[in-house]
Length: 328
Image (tube, rainbow, N blue to C red; front, side, top):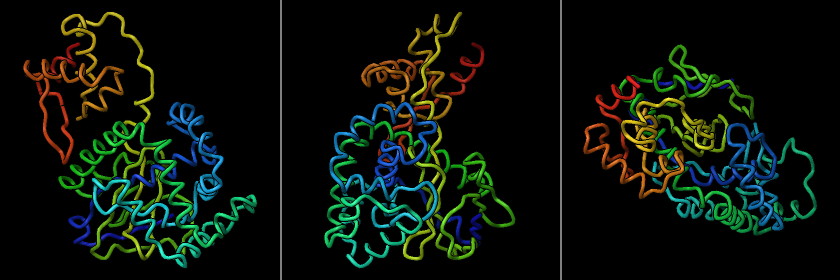
């Protein structure tokens, strides 16, 4: 178990970020079968042919080999984000600037406890240009596995940040951590995280005014990054991930659909929490243009409202919309 002690200034210093390269490396592990698929199994089944198309490159398979469910993973291939809207190009630039000596040390630590890799994978990991080969493979995997779905995935992550950051700012640590995971709790002025792993500090850490970086993810399980050279980071599964790939059961006698039409009724129900048009389009299998047209009608009717959050526009139900959905 990890225990992260929190001081008076850590709440204000804490922040949220999106880590595209972390999504890429975890997507590789899922598509290669290195970690259980869990709630993203429908995505994994779609992604496996795309992974097979790039897996002839031993550097891609080397990244899959480094992926482990618990324990240390090389930091340079998944640097923590410095801000919420960090791009994959910016993260790749950070990874590519890694000194060769640092990369060798991190790879050696990552390999500790793993079975011996295949010869072509070993050759990549011990090559003088390992940083270049691995980051090129990361970029290829990003393009094949993550980028096609990134607008929707980023929407999920941004929605989670809006929710979680609001709870942290308004109510403090306990409320922000509530519902994040059954393995995370607030106890006695500290965050406790029940996961195994490489733990050189004996499980006890202090934020010392630097705050905590919260990183919601789509493809990863709960994790922590508590290395001295990086911001202390808590990674957790974003809310709403499983719902994205679930099928929608048709409703029987649906009075709300008779009143508004099926799509507008579904949109109003889906807006139990703030959402972007991108997420709504993917969730309801309706075109972006169609979602926008229906939302315009719902907004003009006073049933939904919208607000800007960073680069995204989030729609939410009004009190009238809540009453209408509740009555149905």
